[in-house]
Length: 178
Image (cartoon, rainbow, N blue to C red; front, side, top):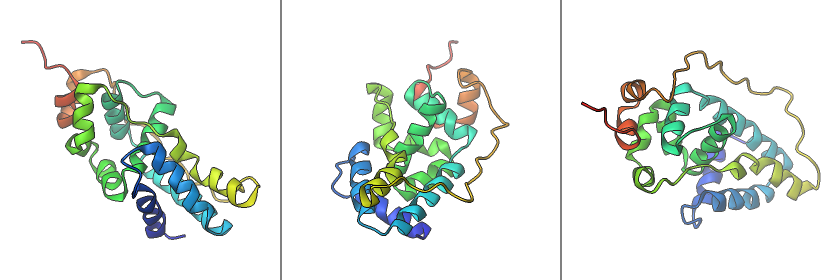
């Protein structure tokens, strides 16, 4: 499976899902389960590459601001949700996490407190492989390495959040007292 095929499958899953992340994940499982086991393994590999590319401190900071906190698992589930938004949104967020402030749902979440997570999206290849073959997804021979997060900053530091993610901070951080 090529990278374009990976994202096309997600786009197909998004069609008719009504913007609901769990529905996108369920549709992705159904679509992927109809493919060959090799395609499912290829999807799993691309998903690991996508997750590695998005394992970035400032994106974690964005998830922390948007969701009112983000543990290790919470950041994983946030990136699962981010995958359900499609390639363009995902790529823009990886390149510039502050771009998420331009999404209407994120903007409304600043008022509603809605959180964005989709654990089910992370399980798509395993669920699809099990559904298609009644077996477990094989372990990858060459697992994708996650980058080192050596540039951590205190996500509770509002001044630092305003400096690094000004658009998101404008939505989710109280203005400084004068």
